[in-house]
Image (tube, rainbow, N blue to C red; front, side, top):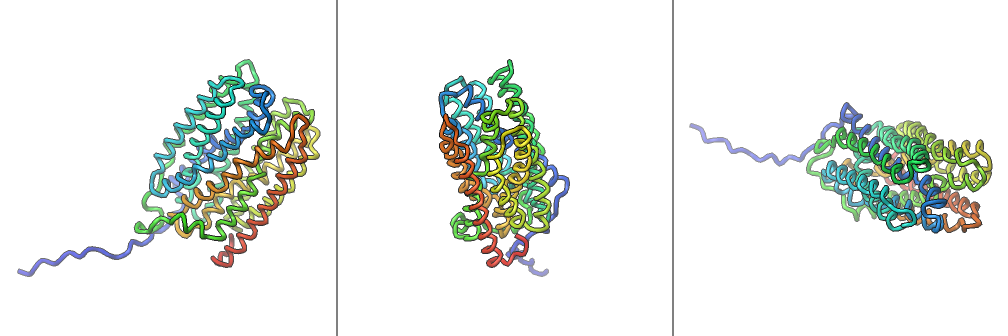
Length: 423
């Protein structure tokens, strides 16, 4: 009888699995992520409604700069929380972060409805801190998930996800303006909006399915270290440029409605300025992203950003409803392209899919400081009660154009070091 053959341990390296593009779960991931951004970032894009309402009614004893800290802190936390969330996502905790973020966001949204007039701290804690943290836990997983299902059409998939926030930016300003400025009042207007968001986030959590562990990379790959990301020069230059762009890009989203009212445009028409601008971003976040899959995210984002910087100065000529709506439509289209391509740009530096969440998270954390400070700065530059609009407009335009220059430099460095043809 022959001796039993020894069982040898398989020590061969685990090879990456073939990448499967899209599929049913891939498109469900896009839909779920789009609903998540519709429910969170779409509300954030509607802050101009709150800025106007707080300035003229609910917190009228405070300056616009002080009030804008609510929106800017919310956006800061939305991006800053991306640092730990990106690492959690790469480690496989997609469902945990999505569910926890949804609960925190919804709880804080309902708490906002209980905030009393002229109680700044109550609004700040619920809208800036609570909703900001909850949003940050939701957005990075929502932005990262499509990258695990799409490669050739990654920019388009991310554009469709960001289009969800655009649709939210269309619907929520109309809804909030109609509700909080009616007999229903602020409390029930916010509450009704929160109920709608609750149902949509529940659907988003159910249909979004993470693709772990077989997502096209070797199972024995080690996650990238944070230190190596900070040593990636083209990546860091791109983030610095993106921070400059975001220092000024959201100025019209915060102040266009208030600007229109102060220019003598009828309030009813001014209320629709944000709606028109966010409606235009639906096209700005899909058409350019489709082009980016063919020509490269950098090659599309840079010219769109330059045009956005130039358009900011056109606000100086807004004096009538027609010019307001024309500006809102053009600015929404071109600025929307940069916002939706930002995640694709950061993910494009990844050498493997295991880096996607970390690169997006680190990038969002760094540029969050621009979002924290940019709009209080522009609010201070307005110098109320005189409202020197030209000061804030010039500042915003200059920093956007400066950021576009840095992003161009990052593209040049990356093409030399990585040999990438379509960045």
